[in-house]
Length: 159
Image 1 (cartoon, rainbow, N blue to C red):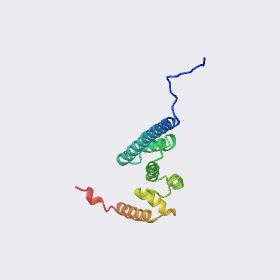
Image 2: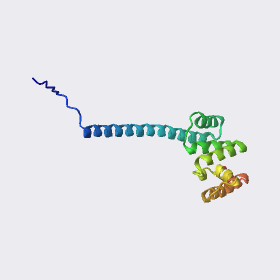
Image 3: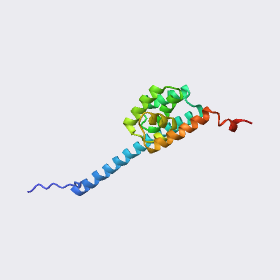
Image 4: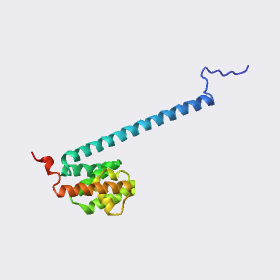
């Protein structure tokens, strides 16, 4: 009398196992991608908020405090946040601190987007960190600043 073991449960084949692992890996990759999108989205919203605040309040204490929080506490990786902070420092005549911030920025991001922030482009050009776009932004900044100092824009504001 032989002993017969029967099982209604069939063990998965190697191909089924491999397919299941691939599906699991794809799901993990998709989840990782979604998490990254959420992460990036929150930083992008912070950038928009900070730049809007700077546009409407200038380099107020609130703007500077929020920029510092985003950079140093929140560790916001979006370059425009650091450039906005450096612009605020320049607007508040904190040249030395702005230069330290610029050097740190260049170490992290190179000259990326500096030309979009005219005061920072001016600082960069004056300290030997320049390229064609930064030189053009520096030139534009100089002309706007000279016109502002010579009250050439006053006729726009007179009634």
